[in-house]
Length: 255
Image (cartoon, rainbow, N blue to C red; front, top):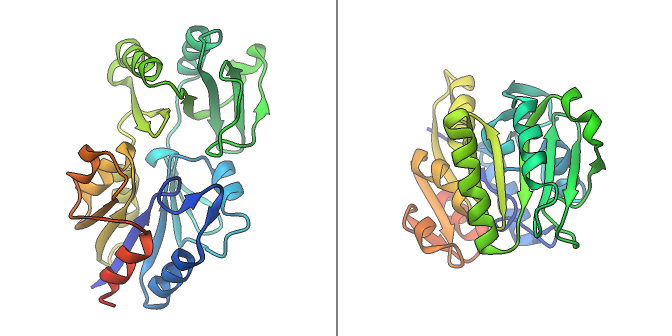
């Protein structure tokens, strides 16, 4: 049976906007063995292209926006779900003046920043366009990322999102971000869609990722890995914890 491995980016492969050579080489070995490599990230198409622009890695498929969008290697869209602009409008009204919160919105083509009350920058969303309040209702959105570095403020925002929208959206914790995406979108749902799309070929599935938004795909996969630095409740959902991604790749190859 062929194998498919899904890779998270930030905190898994990507550190300070670079992928270390040992991980690049291991992904090449994985693909050269006839296996499928999938990028599975909360990032948008725009942010993923930017993150991988200088990396010597081309994923066979991409599961983006925490499962809301699936693309091929050239970022042609195979599957997409979108958010109501009313969600973006409500978040704008709630967070535009909230201390310690930077509010973004992502579409299929661009990343926008709606408010910045943090006052610094993040490598996870390093480039974006401004979007005026008057333009909020004119876009088709896929995600609403909120960068909230302070733990208590992030938890308060998370509770508000759950109370405000209920099960009309999904909200995923990822390091110091909250990612609002369409209803029933996780990395697992995106990967499940891809595996169905790839039939009749069947794949043994592997996942590797460091944070909470990786848990659904870890629970979905046949084999899953987290990291020695992952939160304990993430490590508890995986078969193994490693220090570097290449270790799990080589073990999965039988090296």
